[in-house]
Length: 185
Image 1 (cartoon, rainbow, N blue to C red):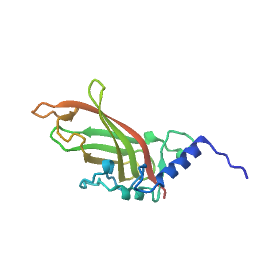
Image 2: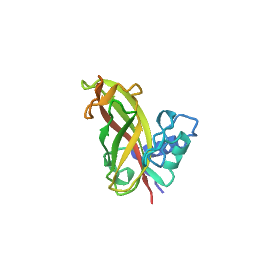
Image 3: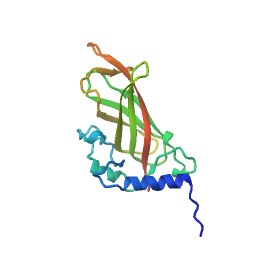
Image 4: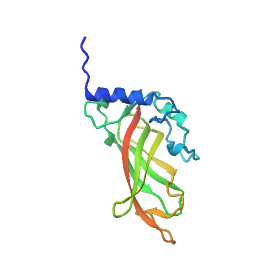
């Protein structure tokens, strides 16, 4: 019996090894219901999106498989660009940010890991953070996500949102998806 090892299968094996690291060790883990577990902070549940402690992130893996590259022969034909982020909003006076997640796959989306980069109108970086969101988004559907804002002093606003009466600074966002999970059913 011959086994063919490709760079895609090596990447998949390494990803599984990283995900099996115990919770106390810094490694990426995935979860199940659209919840923000970034920065080890727990925030209140909003709509179908909630924050989960890092130990609950392992539930996202149970019954799901990960898509983590644009490799056409890997990931059972799925690609990172099948999950779309749109409709970002953050007013200056808000402590929360919101956006929509569109699942363009034929399976239920159970979680996503991504970077959000906050940039000035002249393209300078203000902040960048890593988020692990858990969710239950059926195939072909869209859900709204509400997360705690990085702007704790409420001095910034998304450039497409309505500015407040007090002086603030506009910013834009860039979403960089790292991986997502689909129900394996």
